[in-house]
Length: 414
Ligand SMILES: NC(=O)c1ccc[n+]([C@@H]2O[C@H](COP(=O)([O-])OP(=O)(O)OC[C@H]3O[C@@H](n4cnc5c(N)ncnc54)[C@H](OP(=O)(O)O)[C@@H]3O)[C@@H](O)[C@H]2O)c1
Image (cartoon, rainbow, N blue to C red):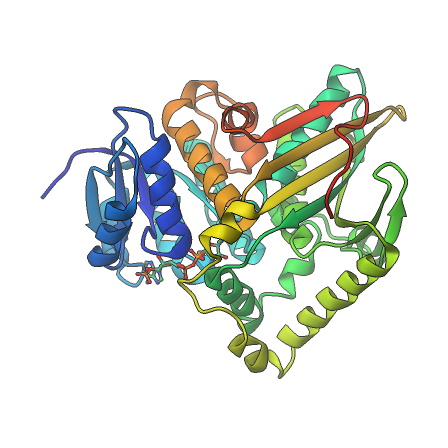
């Protein structure tokens, strides 16, 4: 049996995002990095390996199945860094993250399942912090742009001498949807966990405030539309804000714990930016309709219309996708800062895989430069676990991540 150490283990390599991740690592893994594939079906993993073009090849293929945790444990025990795309994470994620904490392997994933991560935090944050193991969920499109964009505008205000009071951000995007993502959204409702995700501070762990009714109404996810004069756009509810806002709030809490608070009354809100009030209203009503349908007896009907797991958008859709995130921050002294995060490619696939791989490579290669120093750990966020190192890596891969005193780059699209 091979017992050689593995620098980076990719778990779930046979799925739609997993196969794209194999292709990305083949192109971008640095020379000398020993990386390996793990998953249920050797044949699928071999096909993913053979389809990938690039100078770097996976050193090994390991069979591992979340329904047989001992197989996952065996693969993780040899690994320094694990990245996983096997989701729904509430269904397949526990054996992987549990083994990472047990064997002190750093961990990144692309989950957007906040109730599952809230349970991971309860189970593992304290031990991972003591051991210096970085467990970093949300390293895909949710929630890297939101979390790093906020970090940049907060740091910009700090450098100007003021703490941050509030950040408002708004996405514009074009892309497709994966069957695995649709299955994960349905699973959230089927498992009865969707209600939990409504808590604005779900990811604050033991520090989660007990909100009064008044506080809850102030912090809850917005339902209506509103005009934003800074962005000169109508803002509508954004379907991923229920994930991203929780992640940014956890970053603010962890940063305060580490002695670098975002601000004493920091607040973060996230929207979809639209050109007209009518479009914003249609989006708001459509989103509410989907949520109601998923929570009702209509769910099986919705489920039948969704793409099946293992499938995703065509290469053309992935190539022609894009996103843009504008951020406006207000300092405690009234000063403002503006942020911009944008990139080309389908957000749920091209951008997700880029963020995930760069996060894993940062853990594997840049350990000494990561925030908090080499012995810092816990169940972290992209901003607190990877921070400026991930910003630099993504910039080097062509993503725009900027903060400034003035609005950045004339608005386009949407
Ligand atoms: N953050 C983001 O922006 C973002 C973007 C895209 C996807 N996602 C999330 O990523 C997850 C995967 O999405 P996807 O589109 O790649 O889905 P997918 O194609 O259905 O892939 C699911 C993966 O899970 C694996 N799996 C299923 N049961 C398993 C088990 N018992 N043990 C080990 N692995 C098992 C599958 O293995 P087999 O190949 O052997 O069936 C497959 O590799 C979803 O939860 C989705 O929500 C997030």
